[in-house]
Image (tube, rainbow, N blue to C red; front, side):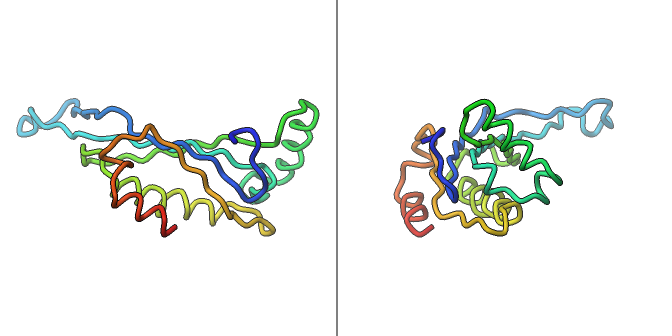
Length: 144
């Protein structure tokens, strides 16, 4: 499916990274032990070049990309990375939903070509139980 996308389809892989701690450098003595924990959530999205607008790719870039893929004999599919950073160190389904609705979907609506309609988004994950394999997440996905 990753290399056989049709127009109007995306293939996405989402996953949380490890938790990290950001330590302040040259901080005020009052913040000596201060650090901020962050969690990274990555979303790798595959989409056909034809579904992306000229405004997003830049003038003439879509035709250059299409010519390059044709010359290589490859399907015209690009991989675009999105990274979400949050202070909550709990890898939960609420952020997965927020990431997919408020970041990925809104981005897609801004960058798709005028003649494109995204009708199928395939989302894969590692299946962590606290993020994806629970009733709340399955109910949310079924309503999208």
